[in-house]
Amino acid sequence: MGVSFTIIRPELAEFFSLKDVKIEGIIEGGLAEEAGLKRGDIIYSVNGKKVNMPQELQALILYMQIGDKVEVKIIRDGKEISYIVKIGKKP
Image (tube, rainbow, N blue to C red; front, side, top):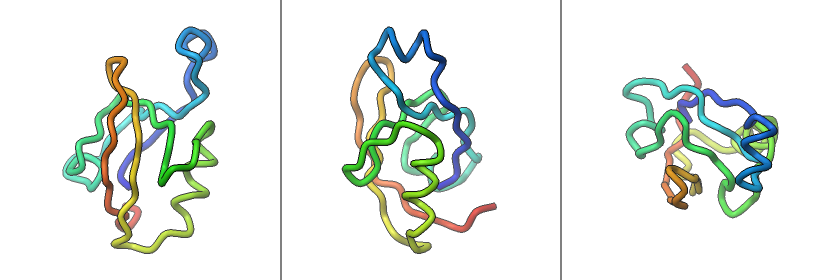
C-alpha cells in the first residue's frame, strides 16, 4: 500500500476513543500517496473491517493481490474520510 504505521499513543487514543493505526510515513510517489493518504492519518477500517493494530492491517493486506483495490477509512483533522487504494508490490 505504500505506508508505514504505528499504534496511537494511549492518551491520544483515549481522548478520541480510538484504538487504531496511525500512518507514520508515506512512500513518495507510492499508491497510498496517489490515493490521497497522508502522514498522520488514522486508519480505522479496511474494506469494512475495523483495524485496531498494525498487525491487523498487515494481515488484511497480506492476502490481497497486486492490483486489488481496497477501501481505507481514515480520520484526518477530526473528519472521517474514505479512500480507494490500489495494492502494489512492497518496495
